[in-house]
Length: 196
Image 1 (cartoon, one colour):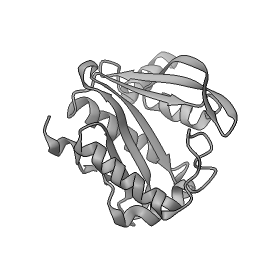
Image 2 (cartoon, rainbow, N blue to C red; image 1 turned 90 degrees about the horizontal axis):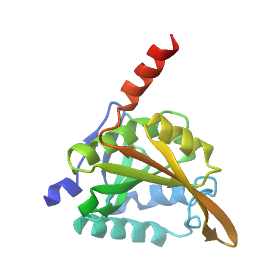
Image 3 (tube, helix red, strand yellow; image 1 turned 90 degrees about the vertical axis):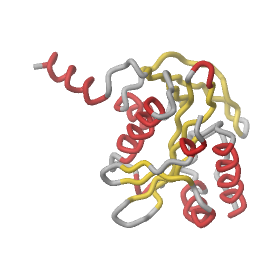
């Protein structure tokens, strides 16, 4: 696969998705040191600028190896970093990957996950040749569950007591979307047609 596929710039109406750079480290730390942002993650909130630098370097190395796609999410009108989105845990033979997002609290409730998410999903299906994209979330994270359903994902299962972070045991809800599934726009139109 072409290396250029793992360093894209993806434009949406309001957002630009592009690889992280060292100058993003302070913005990343501000977002991912927030306990509310990290509430349902399987890692603790970041503490130092080194956490950001390590993440940027590891992400870029992983992209260089074509193992993941980690992109910053930037608001076009201001240039401000809203968060990050990623496709990771690539299994090339099975044409699948996992999707993940993280947005700063100031960017919650503005539809950025739906906008960035659909753009990233379409890139995964159309440019990277994925057949399946998966998501794993804490079942208590209702905001993420709603966002995934809006993005056309289906909840496929529950893995009980999958994680233990700082002595807290939690389950994992598994979601999936196939390239052959209808898009969220088509799904919403079908739902509207059947409810009229």
